[in-house]
Image (tube, rainbow, N blue to C red):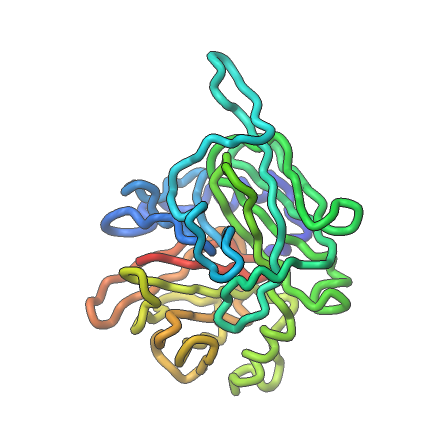
Length: 304
């Protein structure tokens, strides 16, 4: 089981290189924060370290959606960029903050995380960059010299603080660099997660494991929550729950309700892998590449 706290850049590159081409069939899927982008401009993810997958960003204080990050295009950064031959931008600084997600709908209410953590940044090329958040760094992080392309970010809470004094779960994210504006990474409130788990009989004995991986999928279709979406294929032995309405979940339901949300608890999925969703009404299946690791939640929002 991959543990995010032990990752090095070489390890990330190795698991990313296992991603198979052809992540989805059909037209490209645009970025949608909190985001996953299985296809980029109509071209499915290649088997390279530039895959754009994972949880992501929101610049809106009232919703997980954000107009500043709703397209897959790379914007010119206004801060901290450097130029190569001919004045072309080669690197930029990636700046942002972290919001504590306390709603069981996984909407971002703009609750800035008051604790400290490390943002581990794995760019499409170049070396890993670590950026401090909280404490002396204040309520923001600044990752310097990030190459353009898809960037993995791990909001990593110290093991002795995660689900402990800090009361939060670490997350993994991906954004596209450069970014014009500040990005906001999610960190998940442990009490909120426990509240969901307490309603699921399948988790009544062991609860939510701090060593397993976990996945949240928030799906939309035609601008609305995707009703009637189901997980198929390998889940790593996870307890699967579907919403029965925004913020309410059942481990006996078989497809998403009006919230369009799927939860995988206590999974053995690790590294670069895939989960598959299907609409039983149309039999359309979509393979979603994800990055998963023990002790963290991968939060995806997909526009299908």
